[in-house]
Amino acid sequence: MLAARPLQPQWPPVKDVLSGFFLVRRDCVENIPFQTAGFKLLLEILVRARIGSAAEIPFTFGKRGAGRSKVSPKVAWDYLALLTRLYRARFALPRIAQAASGD
Image (cartoon, rainbow, N blue to C red; front, side):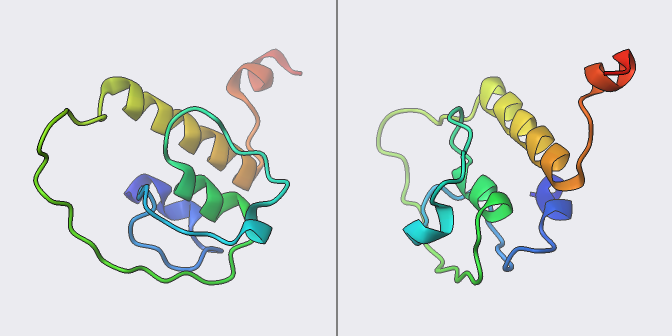
């Protein structure tokens, strides 16, 4: 996703940061608080954790046999909220409400 690209300079290069299929060593993510809402955990791991290298192994999804996609306006909103938190943390940006009130 292009919106996450500016967060990437210190990551190992990963093309699909929204993948839900990944492995990570436990010692890379121990004691790091991650958000509990949504399912974009890999993006947050790549930004906050101590990841030294990454490898991508391509896979192809089969046709959906039953059920529906989880993509919804709420998922898009959760993703934007996560990006906002990660940008704020990465670039030390203040919250808009705090900046406006002088806190």
